[in-house]
Image 1 (tube, each protein chain N blue to C red):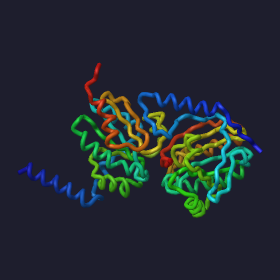
Image 2: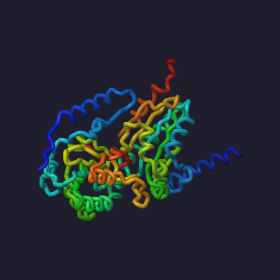
Image 3: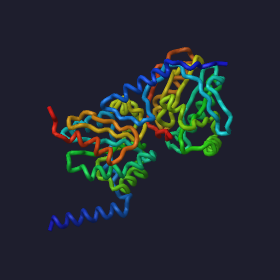
Image 4: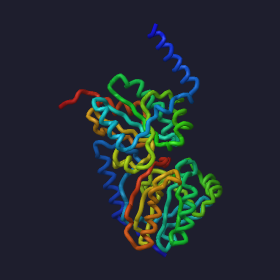
Length: 171
Length: 204
């Protein structure tokens, strides 16, 4: 009974999310700064981590987002963790970010970058990154940056990038 | 009239840095992006048309202390958040000896839309159209807004953000202003490059 009730509740929640995109809880979008980012990546050692940097004001970011959602659905059970970090201002969280995520049916963890420290954040992730969006960073199972994809990406490109990192370590 | 001579050094730096990064094992870059720095290098002269077709040359810029180039967009919300700040900076620093130019290198933004945008935002500086993003590629400009300050010797003295916050009530570092003040005072620019998030320049 409990299991059935849970399933029904989940189905109801999914229906609500699908029919009413603005119901996604903004409390699930956490604020992230440079230090928090480092801790996050460290905490996910053992998995391949794909971090997408985006913003609702970035057209190419919006265009590629469905590819990221598809990638997450295909790879979530294969040792890959997808994360997105929005560069929107905090004032856009409720009116732009959360509705967008709901509309995209994104289920991966999403953060919003903390105010201030943009340059430190950019350089800490990849000194070669200019801050242009979108950008996607792929970390191996040891938490090391394995690939920086500056510019739009695709489902196929993400799978090609991640697949070698999922193979057993040679050493 | 100042003349900025084409230098082999500048091009060599671009090619070398591009080659090094192309060979790097962990970085994949869009083909149009070359994260070489031109800081401290002589910028070759270039000529671009404004939205009415009048040609403007860097060599003919008249600022007694230098020239400010800002890559801008009519559509980018980040660039548009800086409209008033760019006007204020241009008003203040054109009077102090810098000539300001906006450069629009976005493929989807034509001269007519640039003209409407400049007028509706009361821009007090000339906006140039960089068709096929030739100059954006030369400067390795990647986002809007993104500023470049060139002194009267044709040397790039500052590159990067205007300041550190889209929200004009929350600025803690006015990097472009600081660079201009340093050049006027004859000092070294303390922070020569500063990054920020912005809209990618939409290249051909």
